[in-house]
Length: 477
Image 1 (cartoon, rainbow, N blue to C red):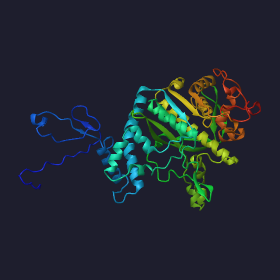
Image 2 (image 1 turned 90 degrees about the vertical axis):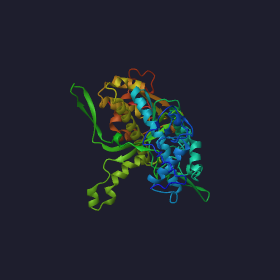
Image 3 (image 1 turned 30 degrees about the vertical axis):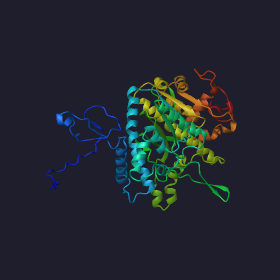
Image 4 (image 1 turned 90 degrees about the horizontal axis):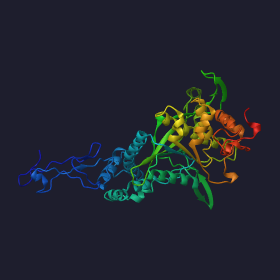
């Protein structure tokens, strides 16, 4: 029973201020920083029977300091399982990161819905590197809530800058190439261009530098050791990528000669999506990164025989593909791993682009009008051969049609003309690793195709360098 205070009037019951999902506006338009209220002003409109605008901000989407503080405390308690006494600095960083991510996800979903509803042409940016920097400060700036967040944390005795220092740099890039890619993604989102970045989700960055007795000692850059709160796994879009094997001819129902890739060793590409917000414009694009996963994680028969190392051997081999940014390529094994990295992320990305396109279109002829594929330097340039392979072998297009589509889809950003900086692979390794794509590349190298005037594919070289070209002695007859 509620105890009556002196004067005989019981206190007003507490009003629940937590929203269920969406902000509820009873009347009128209100500013996002307006203080919520459920009590009438003395002598105000309620006395005359008028309505008052009452706003309840959703804890997952509200932008005021009061709501941000409440959301942060909820995430600390319910996601991290900690209270103010037991939380570590990293717990507090994660609680804040999830608070900010909630605000991004609402805009992220609406952006993607708008792109799909309008069937807009999308820029697909392929890069081996994305030097994104720390996401917390960048996302707060893009949303325009840095000061509100600082105030919310100050009220709890928590320093925003110290939480920002808890975030490791994402080990996805190394230098100018990766920084340019990151700037492109930021700019595309800020200008509200439909765009998607594609790359590899490296488990380790290039290395962590330590100086011991005046010398550099390189250690693994374990940036994912404690997880990444900004990424969202998308197992429903996993891609199956083929390596090795051979190509055999066959005839389709029309009697046309076709080729299929058989006897392959396969690996799965699991995508992880990261939101890339524009600057205060509610546009959020996507960076999709591929992680290599073995088709068979564990060989139970090998384990049962006591061969514990062999039981997980294939898992180790295939997951090395996305293990390290720029593995040392001084050895043939290192060269082959780098080549597999590039083919893996390119094949995953091209298949994903075609999957999304086929959801709304039946004819591949419109692909260049719906998808622009921009290659950042030479690392993803095998994408040309891979798109040709898929259009020819899976869609059954004629060579001239597939080549015309491919030429119209691709763009290329050149970073240097130095020969030592260009990608060159031994033809034998190319053929051994990707039999079907190498066949398509070799055919393209025979000369300029229709609609490809002045294209570098008519030239020859001693290896595969950017565009797929070889001397006549190694071309398939």
